[in-house]
Amino acid sequence: MIQYGDTRNGSPGGSGQATPLALNLIGIEIVGVPFVVCEIRVSRALGPRGATLPADGIGIYLTDTLWSPHAEPPKALGQQESPYDE
Image 1: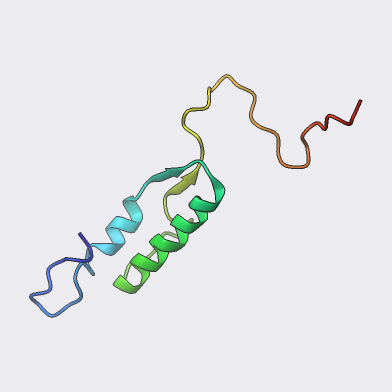
Image 2: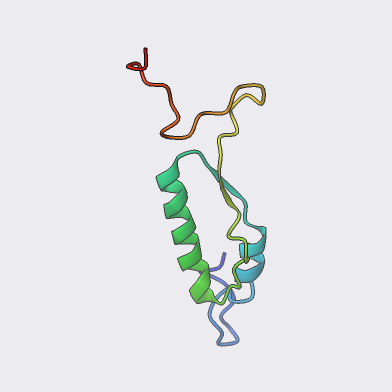
C-alpha cells in the first residue's frame, strides 16, 4: 500500500500513510534473529517514506503465543541446569 500510494500530486507514494502504519503495526515473532531482522527492515522501509516511528519502538514483539499461560517460563541463558551439576 505504501509503495504504490497516490503519486498524482507529485509526492512520494504513501508518505501520508507511513506514520499511521508505524503507529498501528503489530507483529509477533518467536525467534530472536528474525525478530531483529524484521525490526530493521520495517524501520528502513518506513523511515525514508517520512514515517515518525514510535519512541518505544515498532510494534513487533518477541513472544510465543502458543506457550501455556500455566507453564513455567523458560530460564535465561546461563541459568539452565547442567547435566554435570550432580
